[in-house]
Each structure stands twice: as C-alpha cells, then as structure tokens.
Image (cartoon, rainbow, N blue to C red; front, side, top):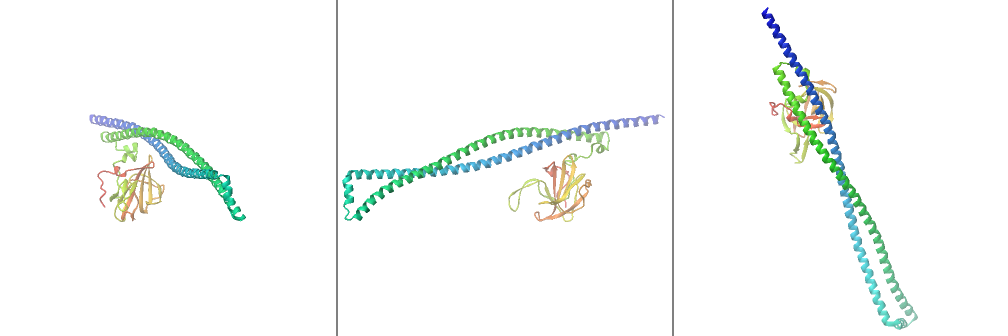
Length: 377
C-alpha cells in the first residue's frame, strides 16, 4: 500500500512538473511569437525606408545628371558669348578704322579745296575720262558708307544673339538653383531616413538577441523538464536553424557570398549566394522544411528551385540538371530536389545556393553547421 502511494505521489509530481514545464513552454512560445512578429514588422518597415532611400538616391542621381547637362549647356553658351564679344570688338575696331580713314580723306580733300577737286575732274582730256573720274569718286564714297552700314548691321545682329544667349544662361542658372534646392531637401530626407534606419537596425538586433535568449531557454526546458515534443509547441522555424543548417550538397565552396574579383577578367562581381563545386550526379537536397514556390529557368542560374520556409525566408537552388519536385509540393529537410549540372563558367559540376529574407540576400555560410566541411566530395 505504501509502495502504491509512493508511486502515485511520484506520478502526480511528474505530471505536475510536466504540466509546469509545458506551461512555461507555452508562455515562452507566446513571447517568441510576439518578438518574432515585432522583428518581422521592423523588417517590413526597414525595407520600406530602404526603398524610399533608393528612390531618393535615384532622384539625386537624376538631378546630378541634369545639373551636369545644364552646366555643359551654360559653359557652351558662355563660350559662344565670348566668341560674339570678340567678333563685336573686331567689327567695332573695323568701323573705327574706317571712320578714321574717311576722316583723313575728308581733311585731305578739304585742304585741296573744292577747286582742286574740280581740277582733278577737269584735268581729264576727254568727256569719258571726266565721267570716269567722277564715277570713281562717287563709288569710293558710297563704298565707305555701305561698309560702315554693313559693319553696324552685323554688330546689331551679334548683340541680339548675345542678349539671347545671356537670357539662356540666366534661365539655366535659375533652373540650376532650383535643382540645388531640391538636392538640399533630398539630402535632409536622406539624413533623417538614415537616422531612422540606424534606430531600426538597433531595434532588430535587440529582437534577434531576445529570440536567441528565448531559444536558449527553450533548450533548457527540453533538458530540465524533459519535454521532447517542444517542436510541436514551437514549430520548426527557419530562423531557429541559423548555425545548424545542413548543406544542400557536399563539395568545395569556390565562390563566396558578396563581392568577388573575377579571376579571368579581373572585374568585381557581386554574388547573392555561394557556388559549391562537386562531382557529377550529386543530389541537391532541401536544407529545411518548406513549400516549393518556384521552378524555372533564370538567366545565369540555369534551372532554379525556390523553397518558401515561412516568416519570409526563402532558399534558392540553382544550376540543376534534373528536378525531382513540383511547384506547390511540401518538402522536408534532406528531401531530394534535383541533381547538379555542369557549369562552364566554373569549369565543373556544382550547385548554386542562396538564402533570402524577404528579397534581401543573406550570407549562407553563417547558417551552416560548423561541423560540416565544404571540402568533402
């Protein structure tokens, strides 16, 4: 009887402990979901702010291009104005020279007196010579007059063009000033958005730390309270697998995430994922549970499989030869997705792999388990 009572007490104690552990797990899950939702909302807002910043930067680049164009036009017009000024000065000098020459001629003719002028005409031996000499005098006088009039007309026309060009330069300066004001306003917006982004990043880091802390508490509950079905309470979120993902295929990582320098052409290339070189006929496997959301050809990536893991996390598997899944299909960790294809660019068989949160690429190397090796073929 005493033994039976003791067993009953132990059973009740275990049940009570299990119940308390389960309650703690449920509270922890509630806290986890609230924190994760805050993180998601923060990420959504961050993306909106980032998108706004991108649009502002586009506007600023457009303004810079327009300002450069205006500056070029203004400089061109100023060069034309300088050329017109040179031409006007040259014509004014020609008129002054011509006027000075005519004045000298008039003074000489005055000194000769009218009689001498008539003598020049009358000294002609024939009527024909008289008419010719008179005609020359008249033509000489008219030619000077017409030349001065022509110079004056040219100066008037040049001055008109000069006025028009000065108006254009003034208009360009007004437009340029307006663009400077727009640029100043956009700079202020950028500063405020960057401050907001900095705050959001700090907020996100705080949420990430809190989630990590909850994850540690979850593991303690599993150990101390022996609740082995905790994944049924929490679920198997992709975020929880950070640092514990299995590789999609065993091989050698020959292309890292981020900016790489092309070995052949020596130009910089930005990679949103990694390329794992492996042997022929190797299978590509899912790194986590999820749903196939896309299968198709993408330029530069070959046949691509995209898996949606929930909470806006996606994994992308590129350079597939064969595909063993279909769109909408649910897959589990380690399920076969396809087989690696030959990549002419990399000079061998291999798989391309990406992790994305929303549409933002994440470095996959930080998500793989540390005890996995990239060098095993």
